[in-house]
Length: 114
Length: 111
Image 1 (cartoon, rainbow over the protein chains, first blue to last red):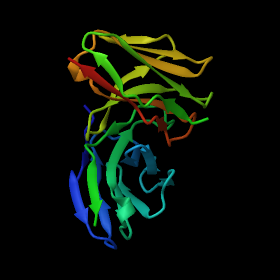
Image 2: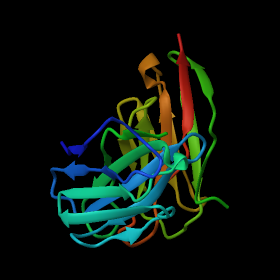
Image 3: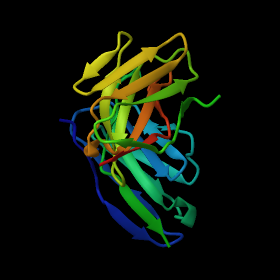
Image 4: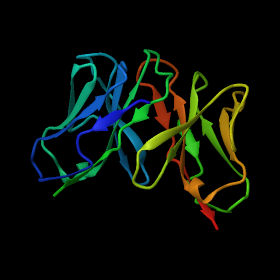
């Protein structure tokens, strides 16, 4: 079974803080993704990576950056947290280079920015 | 037209009934299709892939209609535990950025 592990289930931070969300997968998957999910808006792709040290912007990258130094780990960074970044953050991974494979999700991190 | 469109519901269905959802997609180049299930405050989980010939997994049947660009999910003999949000997922037709997720259809099975 694929295991995608996110470092925190719940996180509370203050406006202006730099926030790190960590994600690790154990299936040697090439592709990793960060989404946020908000009521009524569904899943929105922030960034994805198809290889170590590679990153691509998704649909809503503003205010975020990512890091992929190792294949199994994909980090999401909120450079200066703002209240509109309060959300559920979901990490996912998938195999293959063609984007056709299903994605497997971590448990999610509920982030609150005060 | 939205990339992936679903009726948000909620669908209120008595236990034991059969329920079906449809989902339409806009990209005719899409090759891969999936249904995911998401419980309240949990992560989405893969329910089943959808193949051109249609496929069945126990009480669940998925169908693909490429000509009309829609996929469907049928649940027979519904259980209380089937209550969840069902996400229709379609690949973007190329590249590693992968999948487009619908906003989901909310299903409530009533005793």
